[in-house]
Amino acid sequence: MAEGLTLYGFRHSVYTRIVRMALLETGLEAEYVETNPFADPPDEVLGRVTLFDHVPVLAHGRFTLTETGAILRYLDKISARPTRVPRDAAAAARMDQIIGITDAYFYRPGIRKVFAQGWYRPYIGETSNAQLIAEGLEEVGPALITLDRIAQEGLQLAEGHFSLADIHLAPMLAYFTLVPQGVAAVARYAGLHMWWERTKGRASVVATDPFGGIECCLPLPLRAWIASQALILKAELLPWSMIPKRLCPPIGWPNT
Image (cartoon, rainbow, N blue to C red; front, side):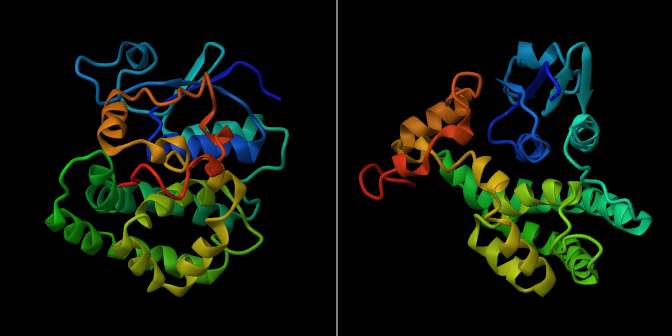
């Protein structure tokens, strides 16, 4: 097992979740350091490992790496487990295509607009913008159509084939489908919908959910303050994946 890995992230970041999921899938462990890419003045810890003020950042000894796709490839290479990169040239190309589509055409409308406005802003006690949700749903359409066609083709996003593309896309769909309109949008595409139904219960998807633990039990004002300070349960003290969901009672403090 590789030693000396450190992951710098922001716990609600979809890209941080992608790398956390990759760590589980590759059987690797990393010390986690919570940072805030939105801090003003800039986060000093994050500034020491990257000039871009973006997460995630992976450090392996003196070697430091940014960009989620590159980090996933690196983890796959140093893992003792079988590679998540297909040997077949066409399948490997489809894997890279899915990652590219997810970053270029899904993330901004699906996450920055639909998820951020439809779920995350209300979650932290801020007002959402219905127009931005509608725009995001329209703009994400070509990505959903293309991903569905790839899923139906069978080279990737298919049963029995779990690659870096699945790891990259799953957290995006997890956030997107927290919004009812996102659920409805995915349901329109049989291939993509079938893939998500198989994938959403995978152990690495469930274990990396940053919204499924003790935090959901906190009253909204306190939850919003903690989220704004990025202080909830830093993983170097208690990995979020270790918090059992049963600690969240079905009644009591409001969840929204």
